Length: 205
Image 1 (cartoon, one colour):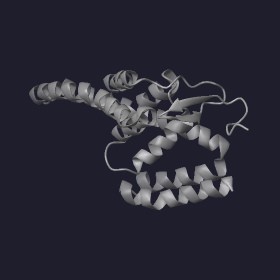
Image 2 (image 1 turned 120 degrees about the vertical axis):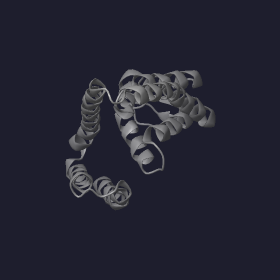
Image 3 (image 1 turned 135 degrees about the vertical axis):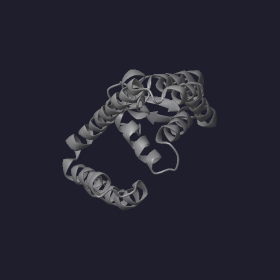
């Protein structure tokens, strides 16, 4: 008997078969070149925050991951040191093509921004005292905050819909600790990770 649920397709990732989306929504596994170009596109079009655009590209446009897979990968990467999006590029690249996939994804993510940031840093140093530049940066900051809120809502809604009694208290407590109590991120992770795991385990038990 097949270990996968009825109607679920499978796809080969890094030498092993994993279940695909039950509705057949996932695209075929990307090639190393596609990983490089996909993450370069994420980097090129991510103004004011990478993660919202990364979710749009990986889940909605490229369909390399389901929404749940993106959320789970992001949760893991937030527990690791370093920028979340870099950690995600390593994890997603390794998922499809091992170390070679990680290298392609990371290079695609960092090469173009490195060049652009060096150019913009030079320009900003010359024009940072211009009032119009300061107003433009304030406007972009507001847009970036909106993008992060929109991504958080997209990630939270499926969990709240499936398991509201376990997910909602964890989300609310995390918000209080970070936004209101203003604890540093590491203590919040150390406090909330065991609570979230225990809540999910109780729901599934």
